[in-house]
Length: 195
Image 1 (cartoon, helix red, strand yellow):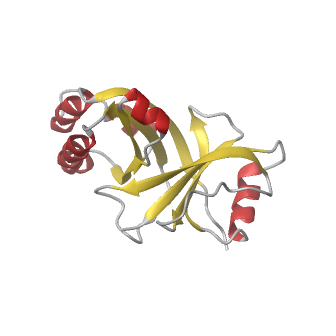
Image 2: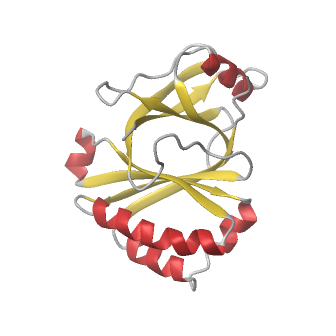
């Protein structure tokens, strides 16, 4: 199973920074799974980049070109994505982080899988991936595990409609919410990699 590095980057104040980042990444020698530009929840000079990574190496922060700074985290896929999966063009991608009680991640993942079948059947959505973040010293001290969910919605209207608490999927997700200490999200657009 593949390992991933998730880069949260700050970009230079230049014209078209996200296109400049895409051009930079094409020459950086990394296997970019997805580059995401902010819509809601992040500053306009922030970006996220998900890359395939060697499982036996520590994350290496992307640098150079329009990148002014950032951080990288090692992620392990859970139920999704499968090896070779790539985000599809169009729609919006919501990146949602969860902090769950230590030892609760397996149940969280199981509940997610149960809810996704109903969720994707009812709404114009696709769960691209649910990842576990490599534990940090701070995670151990706080007795938490962190997960990142990346979901494609046709648009923000679909996201809003999918919050309906009466749906079967949301009832399953309510059980998942009981395991969650904290969560936060941002909506993004997938940036075309070009050629």
